[in-house]
Image (cartoon, rainbow, N blue to C red; front, side):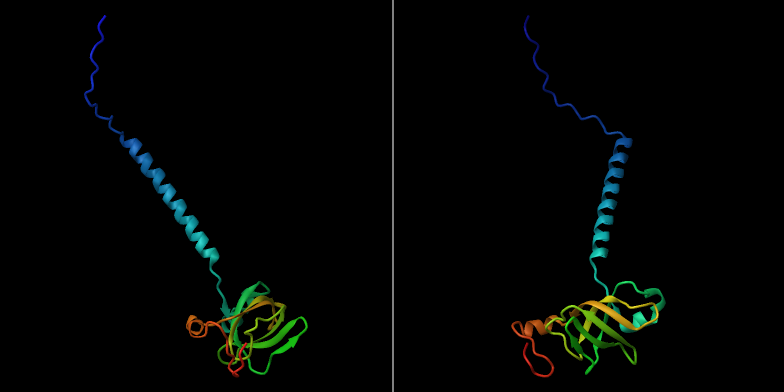
Length: 159
């Protein structure tokens, strides 16, 4: 028996139902929301905030002995270097001050009259003695661009 010729006429694809489109849009919306949630949580947890001496002293009851990053200026003539670290007074604006006892090695740029961030916690809920575990020296990018290979202290010494 002779074979019948093949019908090569294009056939239109069946129309997608409204239900199928809604499902696809719903899945894409859920995926977009999940990606946005993951990105926002990652960004929020990667930020390192710090509180100033004034902010911490104003909210002393809520801070308690939890670990915070405390920002202030090292008070001149108060640095006492010890075998286990250093102690000094950290000032805010006005008369707000916190006594810091830092365990560890202060950074090479650490000195009086500069802004620093100290990671640590208060010794108790009522004291202003802050027990630090790390000192971070703050400096601007304009300083780095002007002095890429050296750091000059306010007293003129090069470190």
